[in-house]
Amino acid sequence: MGDIIIDVLKEELYNAKERKNLYKKKANSRFAKAHIRKKKVGKSVYYYLQWREDNKVKSEYLGKLSPEEVKKYQVFIDDAKNEKNIMIKLDRRIKFIERSLKYESIVK
Image 1: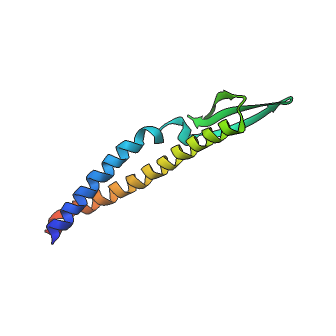
Image 2: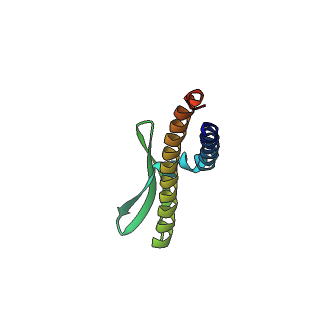
Image 3: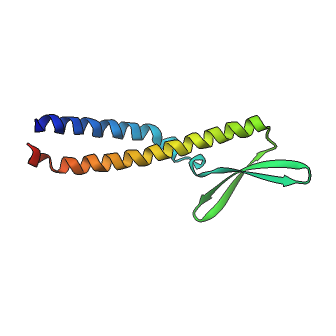
């Protein structure tokens, strides 16, 4: 019985690490930490992508965007933040499984 549990835990650990590798690139992008900033100058509206890096606010000029383009950027940002949250949950799962596998000899 103990061997089955250990094998399931090892398989789950492997799967969690594989999923983490899939999410890693997008979750670490600046979009995972960014938001869209709207700036009005005169009658014109300009959009910037802003995020914090090394205790400094960084900005990237996006330009004059239509509402559809703003929504596309927002969806991309939301996806990156969601994937970052998934990475955090996967990290917790991996740590839990690794701690559980430390006691493999006790279960056998």
